[in-house]
Image (cartoon, rainbow, N blue to C red; front, side, top):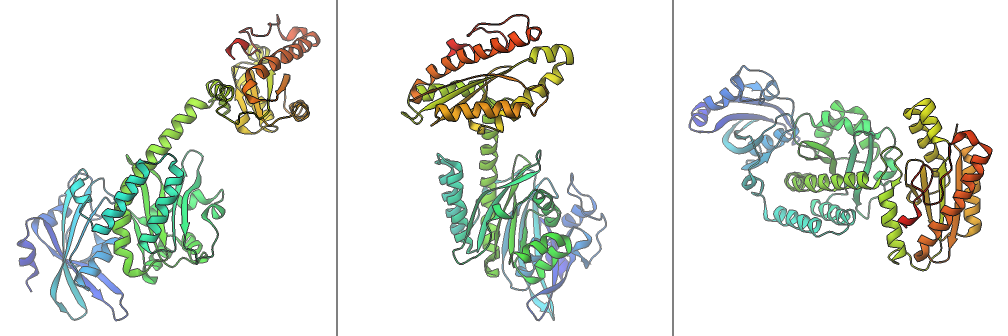
Length: 486
């Protein structure tokens, strides 16, 4: 066959690929036999950042002379050239900021152990939604169901647990998991995971430790510029071993024999990864097609979910200490008083007012004052739960405890004083009160404030130089909650 004549008859960028077939069902060298002018120009005169490893085209060269080894490209070439299948893919490899519309067509006859196919590509600078939707009915149905579940969800994490189970079942895989990565803290967390009933293995949440972020970060190099990793056979897993021996050891140690791994992104920001493991190798093309489209939706949904969580943190957390802020406290007090939260249960309120903050700010500067506030926050968190503590003002903390008894609040106050002694300069004026029904939380706040004021006054009798004057309960000055707010 005149391969040059074949490619020259094609208007789009097209080349002929040869695949060396091996008796065991594997394959050897994959070469670019020849290409038409449009294809050769894409190598020798590249557009934008779509550059190959070389800018010189040499007929019958290994394809890895032009781009980093890509298991997905090899899979499509093998299936088209050896298995004689007509294939199409639309993908966004990480190595390039463009979308590739790719078609692989088988050629006959073979030349002994050499099999051939054409590879035609079209480059899109932006995603073409019509290409993305050109998938099998089964995949389209699964992706549509995913989108509906997520859009109608009132609890995102519950909906994601449903989605991940559906994906695993559709892929007929043993495990499916979504891992989130937080680059600032360099930590990982499992968003959702589903494992087949006959699989005995540790949940991913138990495998993740403080070093796991480093391992997950290495997956980008293992994918090596492609849009995903598909390792469906021992030959593919050998590539994983060569590229990432530490991860390969972890996979094999956990009984993983095959994996499809996709990064989850939105607006070029990576949020984590989704993967399925231990599936029928024959299902690999379907799994890749499914995850290719599912991740396009999941990446966007997860990005929105994480953005909302960040906004919620910004609106509800004090940026200096991380404690819940005054606005969150007011909302909680309102919900308690209206009976929207645990109506009828007792509520204990403790006011903790940091003594001497103004003196530290005046004598040592605001940096020292900020560290004192953080130290005070650490003391309270050593005694109370995170969701019970509110930084209500500059040096003012309010603690609200449900199902509290007077004895328990007295012990908590004692522990606060005990732990304060272990932090330099931390000294609180304290006041607490318990009401039998949390709908009376405003009464508890007012009485705890009055008791705290008495403790504050006693402190300044002993330390008269710590403050020029003592405010009254409800004053807007340093050290007191405005009782009329409640």
